[in-house]
Length: 50
Image (tube, rainbow, N blue to C red; front, side):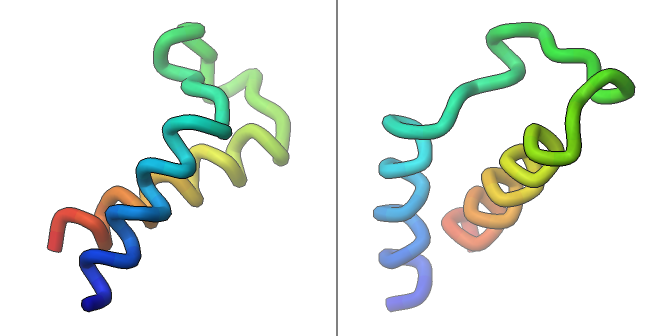
């Protein structure tokens, strides 16, 4: 059940949130907000794959 919910959240994230890897964002120059989005996407992806 938990994995199913995170898979849905991952699809929503993909549609709404920007992809910084496609924009080749340098992590050392990223703002706190951008780092928070990267962290959130990583957290959701990790839990969706479990």
